[in-house]
Image (tube, rainbow, N blue to C red; front, side):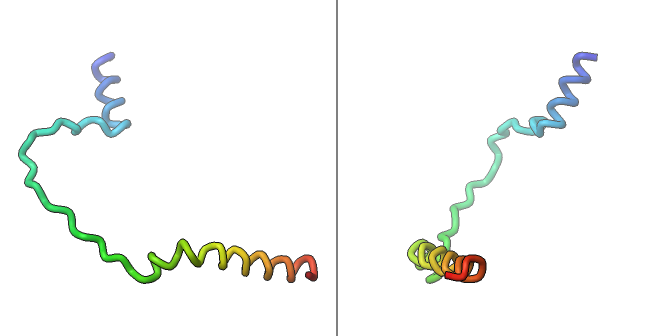
Length: 63
């Protein structure tokens, strides 16, 4: 019973097939393409928050 419960726990937790067999082929990671939007997003985020705050304030509080 205890052995069956351990196997069940391994299957539920996803630990059944974690042994490293050492036969995987090395694949070099591909360089990620960086878009203009991903570069500009951190700079534009405060502006977007300010504009949304203004629009919400104007709609609900009549500012």
